[in-house]
Amino acid sequence: MSIIKKLVAIKAESEFVPKSRTNQGQNFKYRGIDQIYASLQKLMAKHGVVSLPEVIESHRDTVATRNGSANRAVLRIRYTFYSDQDGTSAVSIVE
Image (cartoon, rainbow, N blue to C red):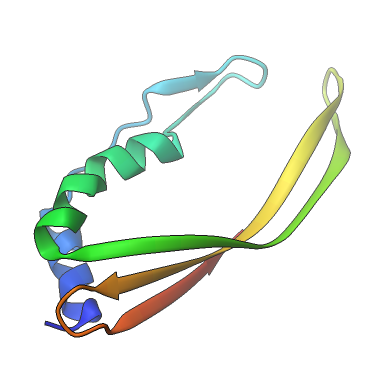
């Protein structure tokens, strides 16, 4: 099965991950990347998909906030998803 069909199957079986964490400094709810990975790990294994992340760009800076300033790290990451059956792959770049 091609990687695209496998990713579609994983998406169809995946469950909603609620925003259960709170950013205390800025008072907003969010879902962490570790929560997303945990929810998808078994489905990816079941469908024979592996993801290999690669940091392709990174920089740090300081940004102004209501309470002064904060340090920020910005990453551009390439995720390559592979099918264990036929070796097909799909790439996604996120920042």
